[in-house]
Image (tube, rainbow, N blue to C red; front, side, top):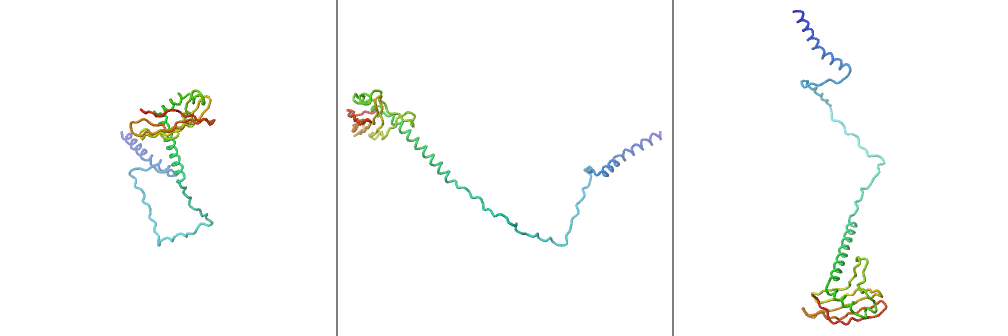
Length: 207
């Protein structure tokens, strides 16, 4: 029995020495030691000087290239171009809208009805008389002048086209008082060959 207890004691002593032997081997091989939570970190030693350090010598870099700061480009040209494009687009839209308003007015419809019924004009321009379309208006005609029914003033001119020829129509009418019909002052077509056709109508009624 005593021999068994002695053997156990010897084995436990060997197990206690085994980790210490492995640690000594790691130290001899130069491997880092494994840290434990109970280890006390080694405090760094403070280095003391007898007097303050001298400032380092300052000197300019030899042959250093002197470069100016980059100039900031002005944004005014871009702003002016954008403003000009915006104003041009707004003006084009305004002209297109006012031209469409003239085309859809009752005065314009009555003018075309009277033009198509005039036999003298059909002899000069031919059949299928219609306003001459413009490519920049997507096939619509361009109406020059003003049509203001509320103020009683209409003064327009536009191109007419038939199967024989073309010409320019001039129409001017005024209304003397509110509720009265328009009195036509000028209603004629000047063909491209110089022929002048007067439309014999005295008044235009608006709805």
